[in-house]
Length: 148
Image 1 (cartoon, helix red, strand yellow):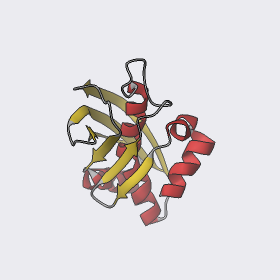
Image 2 (image 1 turned 90 degrees about the vertical axis):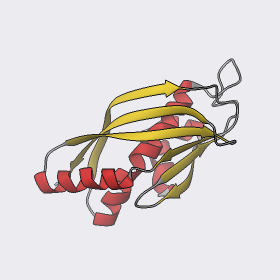
Image 3 (image 1 turned 135 degrees about the vertical axis):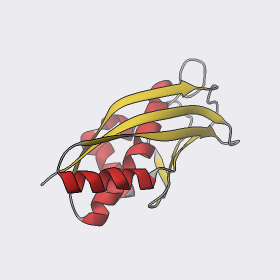
Image 4 (image 1 turned 45 degrees about the vertical axis):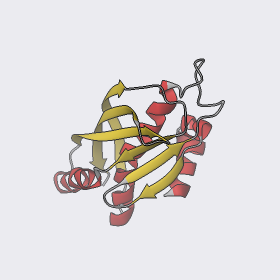
């Protein structure tokens, strides 16, 4: 999956490559991605730019779709249909993006495989600083269709 993340950044979504996220954890239940606070990811207030926060949430919420597709040996069409975000406090350290909704994404994936239709569900992502304080929360509506 680390290679997939790198390839997506280089070939498909250059913003991912630009902020250089690191995959910390990915299993059937949880994903965790870290984005370091550095010149590329900062805003003028020396905290993490909201665009960088959005990239982290995108990856944490989306990796499970690719995880289950790879596990099943099928290709998926995956996108975000909607995003709701709440910025709780300024992120002045590295940020860890956590999603523990792998089983929900698996249900979406299984339903999309069964129906051959696009399936949409909301996935939650929490962004925390290095002290474990929540700096932002995201609700991301994922949209998955299994390619034939």
